[in-house]
Length: 482
Image (tube, rainbow, N blue to C red; front, side, top):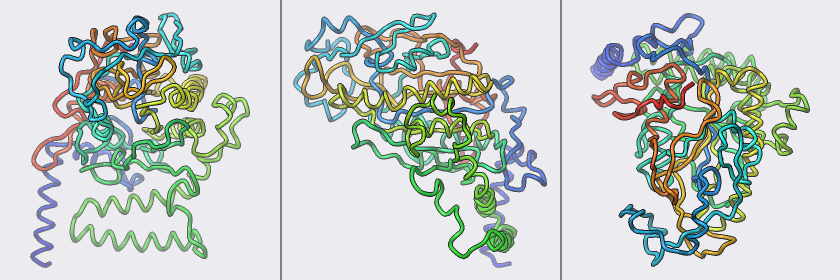
């Protein structure tokens, strides 16, 4: 063995013992068995990670990338009608930093919502006319109106809520869950992602696969993204002239060569490659069955709306999400772009809401009818909120809204979340939180707890320190738990 090989092997051993003693490595390794050679955990929460018995076995996050206007959806502010075109008081803004898109404005005129609101459900929650299907299920939801974050621009904000840090390079929530809990189905990845089409403003912010990446965790914990057109996963189909038997032989030979590399070098990523090749082979059978909705009853397809048969739409993605969840996929995330209404709220926002309203309702009701909502956590929301003052030209019928991190609204359902509840409150301008603030670290801590994980104990040692999704922050929001 060469000196370089000895050095690499010794370094890997040091990393192994460090992780085994201080991270999740010991528990993860102990959970592996001969039938689980891909390196996936069995799905049991290791004892030292547990907070209490998990309420959720799986979760789906309907992520509205671009940030929905809370004043036009869930945070009704009728007093703003009398403030139309008046300047936002400095005492309300209180020196908050602004984006470069509005910081040079000479005025910050108030733009009241042009949409009508009504009370719904036993809680009497106010919901905009833009979301009639969502409004009809308010008794199933917990709306949190007091979310907040520090990030003020899209990429840092989405990266922050998905990975716990504004800078790229850390594992996403789904990757942490895959790492901590493993998969229930060996035929499908434990973490799957879809980026459906949208009808609003088409010049939307870019999404990067690092938002569902594994960061410094082994790469097998990355989310698997599905494409809207063609093969759902690239390179999954055999090339012309290559049979399943030939592909199996090729993978067997490749696995032997990779195993030799692993035995020599000890690089964990070699093991990850072996696992991913095997998963890809199994997905050749599981993916076509998953993607085919022809067997779904007509009544179920109709629940999701007329676009459910159009691949790549939000409706089709929600139905696929349900099919993934019932097949043991641990975490599903849908990124619906186009919510960045800096202008033309009157036309762009209704189009966005129409995309997601009925399918989101259908997903919750479908899970409920199948008895899956009790142990499936559903989350809906974006990365921050929007300003009550107008960006650009203001009229009673149309306006724009800039980014606003100080308060925004999300909703959650299922898996031990209190149903029919509105939590937190903002001032009359929907600018500052007045009751029960919830930071995005608190949200992630609560999601992990519902899945049976103590967020302070799910750690991974990297570059000399123990990292976790919630960094050194986060409190479980016990008030929203049933």
